[in-house]
Picture (tube, rainbow over the protein chains, first blue to last red):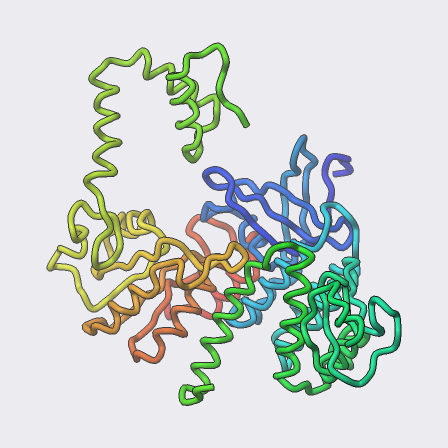
Length: 264
Length: 203
């Protein structure tokens, strides 16, 4: 078994694409190897031994063989199937969004175990999280920091002065907050951000999940933070994260189901 | 990847190009089929041409279930022997062929033409869910059987459909998930095993 061409790693399946008649190309996120790709042969056939262990959002111990252009997955054993997530439409949607974020923000084959830990922990915590929107914002801010895109929220990006307790601007192209006088220079497009919104962003960015998760945060402020982060991520990726459309439609549906008479 | 060869004629290259776009056909197979057709009899190539043309001209989607049909309705929806009270929802027309092969199911179908896949940007409006809801709202249906694939996309679609049709008060069932025939228990994954235990039946 000490063949140097085969290697093993725990990994979470973050993306899959069909290949040929019954194969798939999987994108995996491993704590020791970062984002890797592998071909899983015949996993779309019902009798495949591997398919259940290689479904999207499954944490598995995976065995791969090095290939010329792409590695082949020859073994897989589930470590955590996240059953509680997979039985709930809202949780699946949140977890898929997280997986897509990791896939978009990470380079290929670059080890980054904190990102792996963040993804694993965030998916595990989803079913017990009191506020899914807070879970998503925490994930976004911490992923951005770890991936090297940490937005500057402490002081004004341009003049480096401490921000006043007032309405400031969040400028994606500047990489953070602009004070009112720097915003007036008009060098960057900025979205107005309330003082509460900024404080919440700072709190989530600097806090750990244990303290953030027990702090109740007003939904309107979290929505404001979501708008800021979305525009920031769009600026970095130069495109939208595809799952956001779905996430929005689900959120809209559940709001309608829960409050059928609420017209606001 | 360029599959054309400067040594072959344009007509040959064109067919190789077109054939290699087909699923499961690589450049080599495309070349082999092209040269085979060059040697084949005129009747044989003409039959292939006719078959391809009629595939486009003589098929349409069934106005009721969106299966492939040769007229306004597919043979299953036209058949008065089939119960119209049961609707089995599948992802693609080929799934109906697999289910019809065993000949146990006597109800009707609804083809979604896809499954919800948020990471690929496929949402509820991109597959035929609205058509399903219209059909269910029209009445006369007592049971909806969800037969989407046992994948994360299939499960997402199933949970979404369930959420949408729950207010209509129609019975919703889902194809049983468990161990495939001829497989071995030790290789089963957690999701399959947990659903096999939850869905165990009186024996």
